Image (tube, rainbow, N blue to C red; front, top):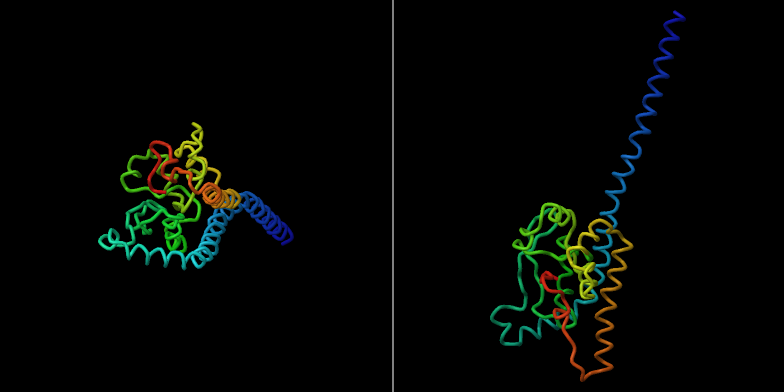
Length: 225
């Protein structure tokens, strides 16, 4: 009887020890999984909160711009909204809608409903057309499919420098590998600073001609900004 009790106690200790070891081995994997799940949640929360606030702030300007475009004859025929097919998260296509104007970057602000809805993120690689997505190699295509395309992104704020390491493809790859909340906030700040600086420069030199945003792009840069 005593031997049976000792054997049962030994088996219980071995079972507990094995369970602890298994839990120790599983903990790093669980932590990594939790971290990978938490990062998209933080990004999506930022998109919804900040995107909604930006949309509410921009709504009066967007409404006035839409009214002004409606009153102009060239836009009454095609409508004030441009509709284009783009590739989103997971390689799924969606219809991208934006105002037919680049004045004060209202075309980008008019895409904020896509951010709130989840088609776009505030920061990410530019949304590609199906034809552009088909030209990507397997690795680049997989990186694209793992991220929501963005309203703005690293390529949009850095590609106009003209430096060889600032080519859009390299910048998109860098963002895919290192994206996070801190980088997203830095890109958003830069995206606000660039047009604000251009506007202030225009006020100081009202008669001076300046290049448009499109003119600053490198050859071969995606038109889906």
